[in-house]
Amino acid sequence: MDVQYINPFLEAFTKTLEQLGIMDIKKSNITKKNKFYVNFDLSTVISMQGTIQGNIALSMPKDTAQKLASTMMMNMSSSNIDDMVKSAIGELLSIIAGTASTMLTSLGISLQISPPLVLLEPSDINSLETLAIDFETQLGKIEFNIGFKM
Image (cartoon, helix red, strand yellow):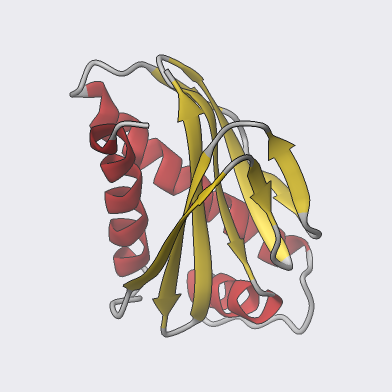
């Protein structure tokens, strides 16, 4: 995976969270996984087809998902991972993917993205090598997974 194709995803992630008022975003760890999997309480995954083929995913603990969804829904809170929380977190990844896709077009990359899939348990997605970037935010930990081939 070439860093010039990874950076638009990371930039889109940061810009999208900042637009939600989440400003204190710190990269805390970068791990290379030998396959694409998510292992937190709530994850959302998008498939990518085109010049790049693979997946991106956000994975986070339950409390982070609830706080993030509340922020997205103008402080409407939820005590469970309900349909509104799942929808909000899925939409967040869709926004990130769409923003990154737009940035990648300037590099000559054609990309089609799928609707988000929300998972409520650890899951293996595929056998692609994956970069997992941990971010610490004021709302909690978010792991951003990027795995693709060209």
